[in-house]
Image (cartoon, rainbow, N blue to C red; front, side):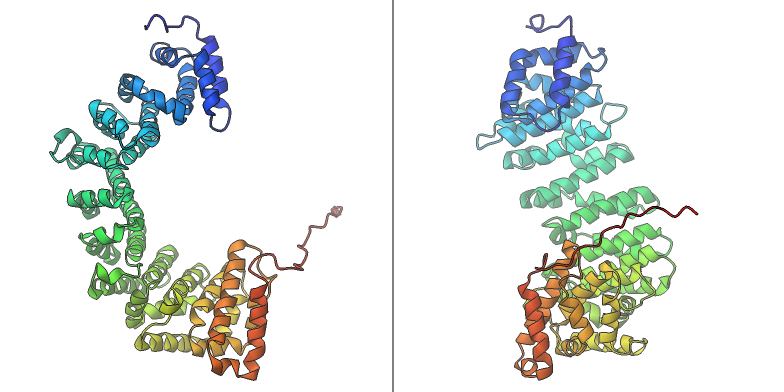
Length: 531
C-alpha cells in the first residue's frame, strides 16, 4: 500500500496543494472531494511523512490537510487515519503536531454524537495523554506556542461531552494524565499552560467546573499567587483569574477558595508591583459584581475588599494614574449590584473617592473611570426596580454629590453635569450613563430638568456620531422621561411639562440617524500657501 501511494516527483502535488490551501476562505465539500479524487489522502500523508525535505512541501500539505479536515467530508475520513494522527501528535515537526491537534478538534466538532464515536477513538488510541504532551514540554525539548494552543482547544472540545469529561477526570486516577502531577513536574512555561488549560476546562460547562473544583485544581492557582517573588508568573495567574471570574460559574467556586483573601493581601502589599495590585483589584471587582453576590460570600468579605481598595487609593494620591483608575473601576464593578452599591456607600471614604474623581475636571483618565464607576453605582446597568438603594445609602449618595458640587466653582450638581456634557464624546457618554442612573432620584431630576442647557444637549439628535454615543444619549432621554412621567407632581408643574414633551419628541426619533440629520462637515481642498 505504501509503495502504491509513494511519489517520486512531488511537483504536481506541491503545486496543487499550494493552490488548494493558499486561496482565502474555507473550502467547499465539493472542492475537497475533487481534490482528493486527484490526490488520495494516503498519498498526501505518505508524502508528508517521507518527503519532508522537499522545500515548501510540508507547509503546503499541512495547510491543505487542515482545510480538508475542517469540512464534514474531510472529518468523516479521520477515523480511518487515526494511526497517522497518533504519529502526528508525536512528530518532531511543530507544524505537523499542531495539525494533529487541530484534526482531533475537527473529529470532536464534526463526529461526536450519541454513539460517542469520537471519544471512543480518542480513548482507544490514548490521544488525551498525547495532547497533554503537546501542551507541555513532555518528551520534547520545547513545545511551540501554536501547538500548545491547538492542544488546549482539542482538550477543551473533548470536555464538551460527558464521555470526554470522563476521559479527562477518570473515576480511577491515572498518574500519567493527572493534571496536578503534570503541573508539578513540568517547567514554569509548561505549568503556566496547564493553569490556562484548567481555566478553559472550568469555563466549558457546569459539570466540568464542578470536577475542576472537586479535583482541587483551583488550588494550583492559589499556590502560584502565593509565590509573589515571581512577578511574571503571578501576573500570568492573575490574568487567568481575570478570565475565570467571567466564567458562568466562576464567582460561585472561586469564592469558596482562599483566592479572594490572597487578592486582598496583594492589594494591600505596598511592596508588590503596581501592575499586580491593579489586576488584583480588577479581579476582585469582577468577582463581586453580580447581583446575587451575597449568596456566595458574606458582607464582611465584600467590605474587606472595598476597605483594601480605599486604603490603597488614600496612599496613592496622584502617584500612579493607571493603578488609581483600576481602583476606581473596581469599586464601580462592586457597586454595579444593588447590594454592592449599598456596601460601598456604607464606606464613606471609598464612595467619596469615586464622587470626587468623577467631577474633577483636571483628572481626565481618572475622571472618565470614576464617571463610569459612579454610573454603575447609581444603577445605570441595573433594572428599573433595582436602581434605588436603601434610605441610608441614598442619603449618603445625595450628600456626597452636593458636598462635591458646593466645593467646586459650579456650586450645584446640575452645574457639574453640564460641565461634563460640554466635554468630548467619551466624557459625554459617561455623563449620559450617570444621568440615566441618577434620574430615578427626584432631587436629581429637579436639578437637570431645571437646567434647560442640559435638556437641550441630551435631546439634540445630532450631537453624537458614534453608535455607542447615540444609544447612550437615547437611553438618557428615555430614563429621564420615564422618571418625569411616573410622577404626577412633576407632570402637573407647567415648567416641567414642556421638558417632558421635548424628551418624548427626542425619544420618538429613535437613537440612530434622526430624520433631517445635518450634513457632515467635508474637508475643503485648496492650493497650499507656500510663501
